[in-house]
Length: 122
Image (tube, rainbow, N blue to C red):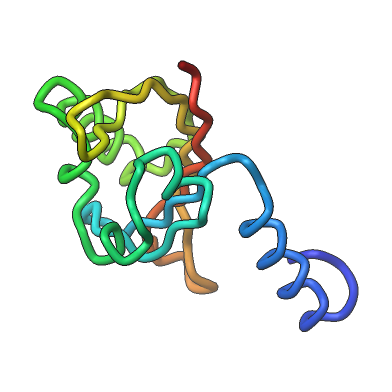
């Protein structure tokens, strides 16, 4: 948590997620989408409503699905690690990206899911 006023820190974090050029993708332990920011919507070429609730596997081809599967195992093991993967847009084109993925835990140490910070590298 950022130092200072909690409400102010929440506002700053929300504004950061909305304004950053890096994609933000929050997923549950099974790869279901819980939240995304406008930058990730731009990378995927989709509206937020088209992404929320969907599996990460809905946005990749078979080769990149295997990458996601391997990476989800690493997140379950608590590993925070960047990796390259290509996301698929609605027109079928792939967008090469680097995802800096980090597992997220609650106050009791229970894993809630993972957050990825996405950079398009095309």
